[in-house]
Image (cartoon, rainbow, N blue to C red; front, side):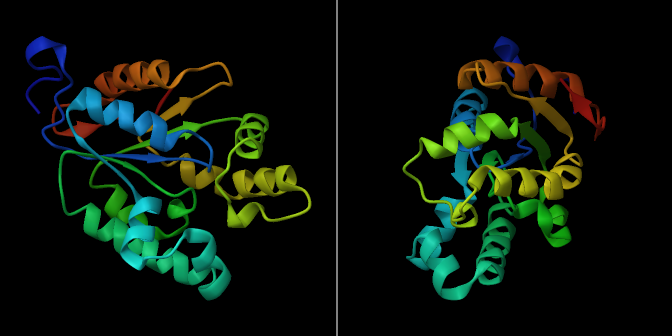
Length: 195
């Protein structure tokens, strides 16, 4: 990449995809839509694509086929999406669990939206979206356990962006674009970049 910014100060990614990873409720879809608009990229959400490709809602897939079947469909969706360029992709929270998925994620810039468990719990408890993994007597304890198990996987991201309860999606997007500008070098990425 010859330069970071093109006409008008836009980040020059040469079509490189951006994959947003992180826990459920981290705001990957919301931030991803803002980011795609700013980069003039297309936006996709792997959970939405799983539902479209199967004609079933994710809770139904979990209930009838189990988590392993869902993860296989999710893997296939990621493989298909990663064949394209100029995309911002919001991934499911567990996509980082498969090493094969990382082989696709590494074709783009991987960004971890890291949100504290307390904030995740508050957001998810106010959401109408059903999360099969949180169908438990103590959802906050489950969230904490999931975060602890996945944290090392998330930490493999190219960019680590800490998000607080007061951060607005547009602000997160602005900070992310600034971090991406710092992380991109000619022909390679620095790893990791944290704020």
